[in-house]
Amino acid sequence: MSGKFFWFMTMMIFALIGHLAYTLFAPRYQVQKTFESAFGQNPKSSFVVLSSEQSKALFPSEDPNLVLAVCPYDVGQGQLKISISSVSDYWSLSIYTNTGQSFYTINDRQAKFSNLSILLRPIREKPADETSERETALKLEQAIINSPVNKGWVVLRLRAINPLSVHNTEKAAARFTCKTQTQ
Amino acid sequence: MNGLVKFAIASIGGIAIGLISAQKIIGGYEGLFNKTQGPWVSWPTAGTRSSNPYVRAHFLTANRLPISQFEVNELEARNDSNGKTLDSDCTYEISGPAQKTRWWSLYTYSSDGSASTQNIQPAGIGSHNILAKPDGSFVVKLSQQPQTGNWITPTKGDDLVLVLRHYNPAQSITNQFNFKGLPMIIRKDCQ
Image (cartoon, rainbow over all chains, first blue to last red; front, top):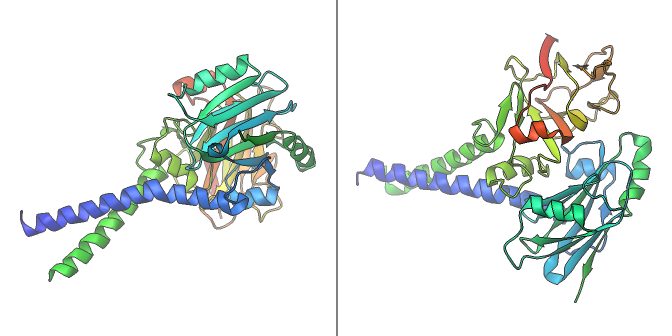
């Protein structure tokens, strides 16, 4: 192997390491730092409703028309029960892993029952695909979702289309609950 | 040149190449994992289980949580419809037909991802407060200068990103990534 080729290959190996490290770890580190600085490392028993100032500080690129509420979870400590109340305007609920991957989303139109609950549990079998889980939620008052990881965040987004409606929307967000069910 | 110096050059140069190439792909400049329609760029697998690390990184490095395209179809524009980079010192006319979605919003952000906050005039508009024509079509002016009709302002001095969000978009959009009917962004004049 010639000297130039050896050093070229060395450079490419470092390029690969730098590329993968940045792609895989930088976003994960950033999202975990953001959430843990805001909500701590321990799971909460309810949604934390973010004020508009907190939302701007944590998620500056999110839609300002939305009120955000976050529930950190750890299904290693027990199943998480999320209770969804009937709210007249738009809302969506997404469940994320602690690396920022969304694996379940439902909105007000899909949740046809006024009191839908979602049971989030550790994965024990091959996960059903996203569509079938959504369909399950359409048919039953309780949806069971397998979480691919133990820790993550449930993020609730509710529409607040003007400053006057923000307070009411925050009150509506407080009607959604998440609670760890210890065995 | 001794081996230690060559190793330092190879390692530093290699890591730099790795970081720059990662940022290019994550930023969407290579078009590997995004779809483009005119000036609008979408990341179809964002917020799904099939999203890859580059797509996730695109959102998370900007402190944005990716969400399923079936829930919110997020489209970004860094250029106008003629391919020129958006400039906060210019006036733009953003016009389009009625959007096939439950509701939508259009906001300007600076290149670091933050929404404009220093202006009295809002940095965004949406289907709930836009003055639209009877057929649903609309025109929005993006400018530092006062404008008649629908007017939004960018943060002065920053590179601009426009983000159009379709909430609960029509299946015709999400099934085929069919983004026809997206607004045009036309540069008018610059200061």
